[in-house]
Image (cartoon, rainbow, N blue to C red; front, side, top):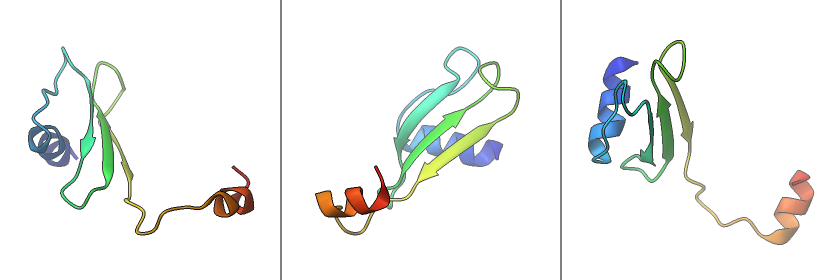
Length: 66
């Protein structure tokens, strides 16, 4: 997980460490990523939101209940 956190931060040109424990950015495939490291979290956490291949229409959002 530490290697992925470093990769995500470096590929977005953002610092990641105790002084800046949160990093948001994009992966090469367009997915969004958020990485949080100590002291902001008890352990390294990563959230990956895959890029949607199609655009959601209003009817889609209503159908999904959002």
